[in-house]
Image (tube, helix red, strand yellow):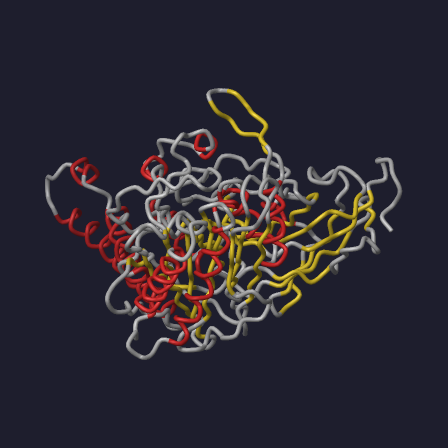
Length: 563
């Protein structure tokens, strides 16, 4: 099993030269994730103008990559090795800057990631180091999290939610950076973090030419639906495209591609052989002098969880019987007194919730808790003006709006505490794999158009238990449009054509005529399958397959059939 990655850099629409640099510069990495020092990835955004920005960023990626892999055993900690490599790059930039007046003000941001992964344990680690406002994002189960924190004047406004992504484009301090590898600065102060990696995780390294031009929700959707090579290309196209922004109560149309654009996407392969009972994503760890040992999920954890639940249920029944016999033995006590006491069922359930969280999650935060960030370095602001305005946004901790099903789910019935506990135990979202599409086959060139008035057999594989609370949502949409549900996921399992084929494979016959995302004849449609919760109400879980091209013919629309 190999780590899949894709990288691309683009000059943008306004610049004369590309001052961004990246590493590796080829489609093949010189190391593997199983190597002791892992796989290194770097993005650097040069600053300074006069042709010096590209020199600074080029020196940075070259020196960091060389120093990181050639340094001796004195740096046993990968975080320390990364930090030392960035310091070496800063020293080299300062030496080269002193050689010419044209380069004396040059500098660069840097973001570097090292990935190690164990195929046997389905467990990995990543170390992140950065200076400046180039970013690292983590996509986990369809949700985008910003791992790095911008070293910029506007970051406190972003972090506190005082400014929106749109408003930031017009802020006077949007281009002010507080930390970078700058020649006129005596020291660089990189910030580092370590985080755990799970099957299916993705990392995005990018310059602000991407994060400042593409909304986080669009980054999230693109990475969730497309493989790395295609996602990188699409994100750069989005950064270069014109866009509407809202500021001071008005919509304004802005040109895209104001800066150079660079992106690297790294995907950890999904585990389709077994599911790991991890209740919540492990928290991002701040830098520490030694590596933090994070317990791996054990195959027997789910069995232990079931045992705990059974014991709790037995305790619940025993407590109920005890109260019944105890109350019947008391002479002359009003029955209202027993009724007024807290119900034993709710008390036991509340205790059960606490125990289950402790057993399954350890010290991890609940799933809705934002991933923690490290503190900003205490830097004096460095007002770097030799670059285009830097546009940023704070951490994203909530998913984008789910694909809209064709029918709106009805309001759920009021759930008792016991029912809520059952639903929580039945669906461990972070252990569920993503579906794999089987049929129809990919039709990139539109050679096999499908008549939407006829039923099409959709086949996919999902090697996990399809509980009563879960269902599948088949989505069909035009490229660059919003993914849209082609049917009502709540009733899929009641469809007579829905079949479980064995070995985790499923199929259903669907006629796409009338589906909300199917409007015209085109070879530019995509389809995907997502796993959704349908009980007690519809819920988008962010568990979605890669998108696959499909060609559709809508008889009522004009135009030639796809060829």
